[in-house]
Every structure is written in structure tokens, then in C-alpha cells.
Length: 260
Ligand SMILES: [Zn+2]
Image 1 (cartoon, helix red, strand yellow):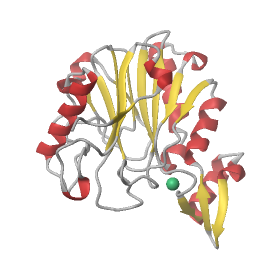
Image 2 (spheres, protein in one colour):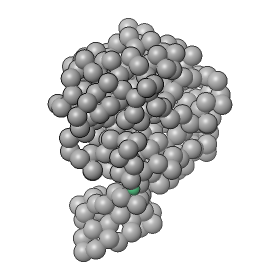
Image 3 (cartoon, helix red, strand yellow):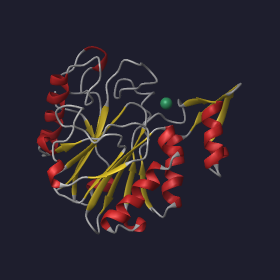
């Protein structure tokens, strides 16, 4: 079975990039990480991860030796990826960019990747200066404005203008399932003037949070006008996605993008 991959029309229609968000279907992993696990996790072998990455890259016409990854820490550090960085984090997690939740590049052939089980994937293309970026936005990254920091980093590194950017907010835990407690709500209230509309009460000290909408608002606030938002909730669809909320022992989906 070939890897099942999601693509986003906003990006695909440009013809400038190869990209995907992976599902859990069509790989070689077994057990809790079955089957298309893209991340180096404790309960899957590195060989399986490398095989799955090869399968996905082959399906996209990308070369897996050009994969670049960051060690995601729910922070907001950005790394500009240059030709000499090709392969960092492709075969082992140790060589990935340390403490990095934002990757950006203007080099064609480089395959930016980031890894998910419920957090919000942000994918960017600047079709004018021809640059791409990925940002990993869980709730901690979101309150730190990781999406806005990615937009700023593209501006500083490449001269990208927010109004030119195409942005995708990918599959993640949806407002139907993403239950949070008071400390999370307090953090949002502290940094987010319109936090109230993002939370729906779920019981004493519990709320449902719309993390995709929080990211959409943050991107719109910094001038991004073209935003595609995936309707998929990763918790609702265990057949299609890994979900950390559904099971602590699970695999990882990947965002991948490369300029062609
Ligand atoms: Zn859901």
C-alpha cells in the first residue's frame, strides 16, 4: 500500500513546491505506531522511520537525503536552512537542529520536515521570493506566537512580505476534542486579547480550545491574508492520524515541503 498523503490546494496550485502532511496509513511500522510513523519515537525502530520517510519522499518526488528536521521543544526558535544543512535529522534525531520549532529555506531540493501528534502544523510558501517554512504550534508555541515569529523570520531572512504568503493550518486536535485546564486558559488570557472566543466551557475548570483558530487569528494579525485551514481533527480520526491525546504510545505524522 502506498503512503496516504494529504495535500493542500493553496500550495499545490502554485506548482512551486512538493509538499504533504502524512497520515498514519501506508507505511511499514507495526504496533502502536502502525503504520506510517515518521518520527523517532521510543516504541518504533529507527529503521522503520527511515523506511517510511523514504516511501513518503518517493511518492512526492523528493530525495530523503535532503530531509532537514529540528528537535521540537514547543518553543519559537527558528533555523534558516542552507545547502550544507541537507540531511540534518534525516537519519537520526541527534543531528537535527537543536531546540528548533521553526525551519525556513530558500534553497530548492531541501525538504523541510516537522512532526506531529495533535499539535498544529503551520506550512508557509512565499511564491514571490520563493521561500518555504514550517512551524510547530502546540498550545505553548501558540501562546509564544510561533506562527508570527515564523512570518517575521521569513521577512528578516528573505524579505518576505506577510501579504504575499500562503499559509496552511494543517490537521490537529480540533475544537471538538482539545480539552484544556485552567493554567492553559490563564496563559492565553495573559497574551491573547481575544482569547474568550477560543474557549468553550466543558465543566468545572475545563474548556475546549480552538487552537487552529488561535493560530489563524495570530497569522491574520501579522498580515497573512491567504490561509487554508484543514477541517481534520486528529483525535476524532484514529484510523487516519496518530493522536497523543488518544494514546501516549503513538507515532508521528510529518509536514514536508520543498521548493521544486
Ligand atoms: Zn475531534
